[in-house]
Length: 118
Length: 110
Image 1 (cartoon, each protein chain N blue to C red):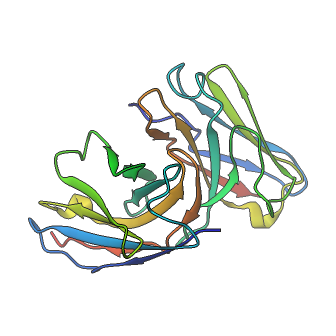
Image 2: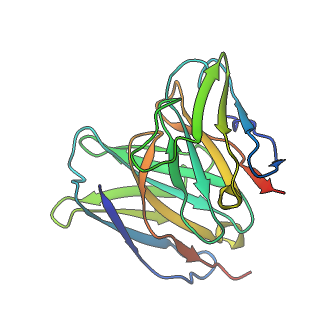
């Protein structure tokens, strides 16, 4: 089964850009059949889909975050990444990377708590 | 895309069966057999319990089962155990090729 390892800072200042990376083992971010997703969970709240990258680098994003989100991949490092710009305290959450389908997530990263101080 | 509707909480006694519903529309739950269910313990990543409405991944107890009728999917847990106490989420594929999530259900084992 695919394993996902997340990395990135746990503290981001307001108005700055949140950047996280997910390193994939046991699978390939270049796979034409797999989707590589980012999901977040605000403290005490439910899961929220952020977006995914798939196929030849196509992306889909949650409409509520679309103007601030970019998901990209580095095939040479077998990684995919999340950038969220202009963060506020409302973006404080545990961020997860997940795979392998658009709406089915067998594999999850360990989660990264990202705090944006108010 | 509106979130799928789940009850905020359900409860049951050990040994009993409970069901958690997940209601959507014909553009998501009702239109595709791509509903999945996840179990989440506090501080942990979600775990896939059911996919494609009623399929169970290897290693998941057969006490967990899934079904769908119209725009509503359901997760049933039989022979309830203390370790089943957790949050449960449903997710469905949608007509926009993106997922839609349920709001989550807290299961309490009395």
